[in-house]
Amino acid sequence: MNEEQFFEALKQKGIELDSFQQSQFNTYYETLVEWNEKMNLTAITDGPSVYLKHFYDSISAAFFNNFSERKTICDVGAGAGFPSIPLKICFPNLEVTIVDSLNKRIGFLEHLASELKLENVHFVHARAEDFGQNPAYREKFDFVTARAVARLSVLAELCVPLVKKGGLFISMKGAAAEDELADAVKALSVLGATLKEEHSFNLPKENSERNISIFEKTKSTPKKYPRKPGIPNKTPIQ
Image (tube, rainbow, N blue to C red; front, side, top):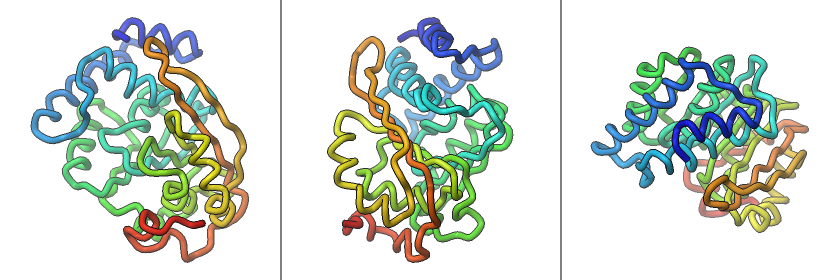
């Protein structure tokens, strides 16, 4: 998917980018490739693949959810900025908070935000488990999202505590989503989230399966969650 095809594919989904937004994606790609030579941000570096598998894939969350109003979104373990930075470019009204455990990645993201001239973007160097226990962030966000960070049963413990009551946790997964969802039923219930919508589709060009599950926060998360760093991964809620 080249640049023109990317912009046209978004347009067909009702997301029309102006020339500044288009230039932001170009700068994003160039900055990603440049920094990837110094540190491991992504194994995908050729233009068409980045535009499809990173940019388009990240924005797919907006095909099923309205980000056009002023909203707060937290991206857990964003890595090179996916999905929140592509969403922020498309929807400048979003107030974005990104948490990542690796300080070098935070350094890249701060540089990227400056290059892209993004406003209302905040970067926090922390483990997601500690971040979720911080009163400044806990149950404060309209949306919390993560893309292929961990199995859903683990991911839910890292993300749901950050969602405000009535807000949404958006999980972006590949082909294994159905099995992961079945495995995470108990965790989601304990954490206070209810499945609202499921969407399955194929990425254009390569037809690989993608699944987006949207969960509504229906009650407050018990204070013990998330547990201490490393524990959710070792012993998921069952």
